[in-house]
Length: 210
Image (cartoon, rainbow, N blue to C red):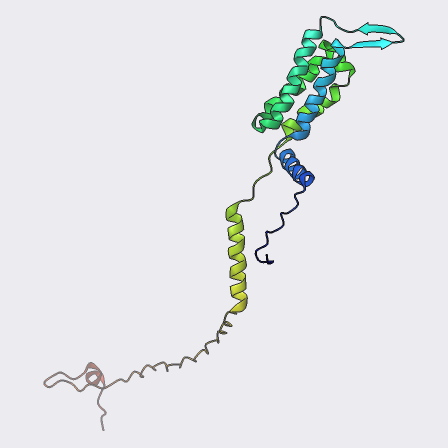
């Protein structure tokens, strides 16, 4: 058997790394921490009404008539946390319901599990309402960026011709045209018409007597 025909060695798969990458993708695609805090808030509300505490050999049973209300509130908080994990579309409803149930548990369920469920419930409800999905990168934007890069490279390889400087057009002097002078008024003596009378001036002038 030669090295060419030998089977390739199978790659060693890192199970821990694959699990962590899958968990990271799961955590980033939903309001993970809000749902987790809602489920944590439901645990003390469920536990204390049905627990038996012993203090100095004395057993204290905390089961009261509020046990049914505590059971309902605790179970609903856990269900709302799971809903925020697996149905992120209803995260607003889950966050509002978690906040209201946490406030209702103060008078109903031993001051919200002796205060242990108050902060996790309020913070978890706020995180579920405030969570928003990350926007996906647009394909058109990537294509436009690639086209812009190609255009810039082509422009760099083929420099554009230098623009021709515009030469100012020389202004031609306009020839001044001589102004025609008006001819002097010439008084022409018109001869008397044939058979006409002597002008009045000649008739009036007296003749000299010698």
